Length: 98
Image 1 (tube, rainbow, N blue to C red):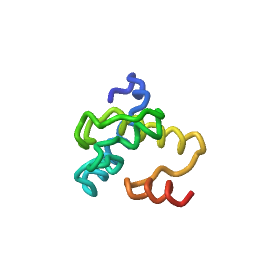
Image 2: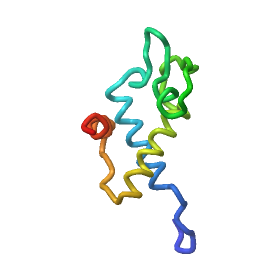
Image 3: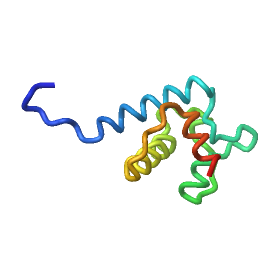
Image 4: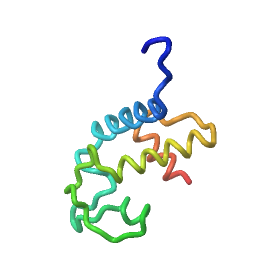
């Protein structure tokens, strides 16, 4: 980056999302919020209160719902000035410990 260039807004957010996505892919073959039996996306149910089947067959790499979920987590942590989770498992543990 040149000296006169301003940092890109959201660059840290995109890097963190990519890091968490990589962590999730190393731990899960299919989206952890996808039910194989019914093909329901639990993110769609919880975030948008819509009942619907996953149109990506459980593949979460590049899934807009999964990315929105991670963006929401990032915004929540940064607004509360908390340290960001280092892995997807840290996010799961923080959600289940509530």
